[in-house]
Length: 169
Length: 276
Image 1 (spheres, rainbow over the protein chains, first blue to last red):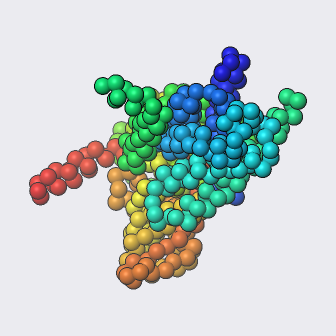
Image 2: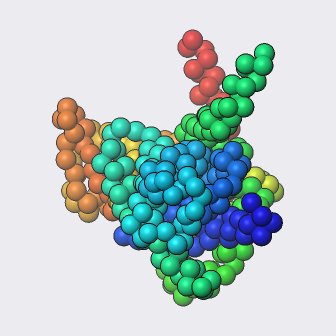
């Protein structure tokens, strides 16, 4: 990671936490659907960056959201998990090109990018809602929340990527 | 020894992940216990400050509606006052000398959620405003929740829209009582369970707090009956209630302190100890 990268990631971390806590948690589309855009930090973390550091930072990211939401440690657990699982998902969605570090998420093939983002988002949401609801009596609610919030988050993340990609070109 | 160190180095990512995951599971389970979420809660200095800042901005958007609510409440209180004046007889009591059983405080809601299964609110009053754990929280329209955690300047409230919440409630007309719970489906509808089948229910009946707890005084409005059915073993009703409160837009709330709570709890505890 270069110095520039470090700075960008610090700013991204702080901006995403504030955006999530102050704006996105209050959307409640159709009563219960919120986008969890802060996952963008984990998704966009440099591919050649330190993986151990990513797991720790993701945990901190999730914990900050938890403190704002009064939800214990559900976001922290889900974030730590997807940070740990990220190399596997990357290999699965981008194939060989990931291993040679030639890929950039912002410039990748749209389909491969969608698979990567959706896989990460749905894993995160499932763990998060499972821990939050914490009961097998509400299985339907769990699946419903995961599906709809997951779709919403994926769309918002894709839109954000497109929006900020244009600017840099 | 070297083997062990190599093992740790090779698996450092997994070990770090496992440790962090267990910590967050611990924090999650801890919040499932009532008012035990001391460290990770929005009643701390930083998040409380940020939420207050946000609220100072967003408050202005709902001023019109808040004024209407206050006016409605003023009208209601004036009517009550007139009734009392009519019934009053004898010399007037000096109200400053008579100790009130219930004390009221006002507070502002600086964070509110209602889309999860365990919802919490954050208020901008804390210990230094003599707020403590287990105070009841109501709005001008009805029940809101119970204080679950306090810091110096802020307090978090376990909303009635929380699967852990269980509040004593009764029918206004017949005093049959049950417990108010929430099935997570709709933020405007709560459920009343454990009403015995002897009770005669009708759609539109008013539900109020029962006064059997040390937290809420009797007769605080909760909602009206939307529909009801008997539960599986046919002994109790399962009642859906339309809440009077719009839990999705709360701005100003009142906290209720029961000055006799300590005494009642101590007494009941004494009885329990004696039975053992």
